[in-house]
Length: 399
Image (cartoon, rainbow, N blue to C red; front, side):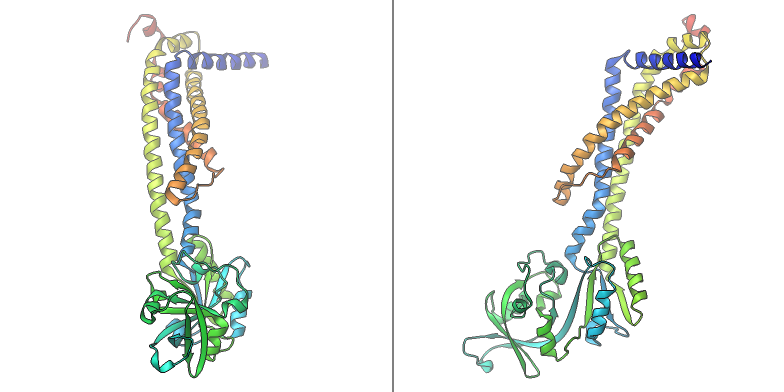
């Protein structure tokens, strides 16, 4: 009995091998169709998976996505401040040290250009918003949208002597990089060097950014901050989960999401994902139609073979299994080759779309191969008509 099964299995695969290579031209067409479909599918799926990480990374340029403010604060920095202990409490409750956070102290300050001989009465003085923060932190996080920072790793003493000036403030005062500014409020004065002019097209263009310690000295708010901005990397759902967890740990403070960034990121990824998914579906349908057309020709050529197999005792199930195995093997071969090519193609596409080559995602390869095998099996539907062939009709030469 076991020997008979072994013989049947050997004969089964021999028939499949002979039938697959009987018409090499048709075999090549089917493999090309399946391989092209698998390549495009793998490329688009790899871009889709990689896009989520890319979008999250790109959105970091637009600043923080969570803000911690004092309890009962309705207008953010204008009403209340965080104590030094509360600032330390926020930082200590961040789950990872790699999560970026920066305290901010906002206050009104008079600014004028400082010359060699200080004559305050003769110089234009304007009132602006001063933003005290850690200038040694990643500046695109501190000033949302600013992609050209030049400050690297600074010592605390270095950052206390410099400031960053919004472009509209610099235009009003006529100052340039390297000039000295005099900041004063309530009789307290600080002379700082303009390190860089900030131009981002937002409220930052009307502000002066300076070291947090210097801002606290000018505002007489030692150790205090108006708010703390936090940048948590991840999707909008992950950011909301992080916000909820942080709020539970800090019941005395308000933890708010900056929704224009998190929701904008979610909408952008949803649109990109939807477009890529729809394109993959269209490609798979077109691939199935191409393979189905080739399989229709196969069905017409195999009528005599199927009639002979049924005449010598071949069951309908065995005949169907043979053709499905042939289709699955073609899908597997086309998928293995095409998916590998598609992932390589996606690397170049990622560089063209995001400016950085897409990272190959291993999960994409088996998914693309599986989809190609499924398409090949479904496209073999025309072969089902061979099941209904009657051997006597074939031997009589009837259509």
